[in-house]
Length: 310
Image 1 (cartoon, rainbow, N blue to C red):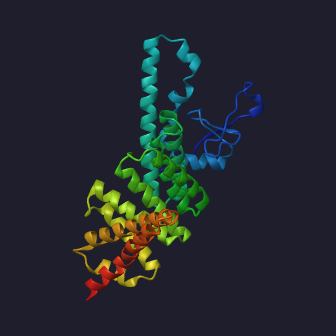
Image 2: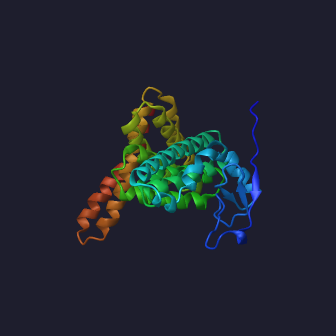
Image 3: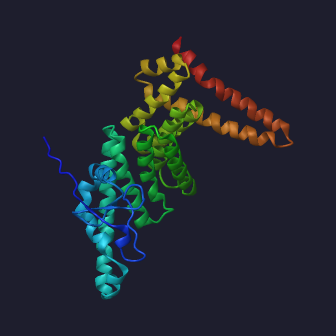
């Protein structure tokens, strides 16, 4: 059995700090009263937050934080150009290493269902990504998604929705960011909408999830299979048992049939947007044509499933 060392803290007095210096809690950003006695560069508002951070990630990265948080602009200015460049490269390498460690730990905690323990690692990943890439970078999206998954697991829907909104905005500004990031974003959005009861929205996002995952991993991958099951669960919640039964019975055609259904639901949502736009046009013949196409798409899943059930 692995022995876990408990964190050691030393108390700090905020009023005794040099003028203009303020220490904030690593987790909540409130005024800090405790300091990690080992690295002496992380601070906490109370023992509860120190322990949460220690269990979540700090135990694994404590010594790595010292060099990146003790270097100051003054220390850089006292050195020659070559020394400064070398130190900057070393700090950047350490930051990238910390990002990788934090992301791996957060993903592992989420896989184990330890959503609360995943949050400190997710926050650490986000903070260091901001330091390296800037506050508006597309590189922040994976950290947003990790934190959103943690909050959804804890039932904190408002925090999850806010993080996913930031991720969605970033991806919308960088549409060429790659299929993998699109797949992960749509899967998280689908989960959020499923929890909130927006089943139509969940279907649309899971459809996009499957499409983008298939582009990266292939239709027969386990990544796509997870998306198929999530999509089937939404159909089950809608009471569409015939579609669900067909999905689970036809194992050989499972990936292909579900991908077809996913694409139909993508087309349906795009069709609805087109219908709304066409209704604002004086040319009502266009609205009629779009409505007929939308009606065809709406009946496609039920028609195809009925044919296979005969």
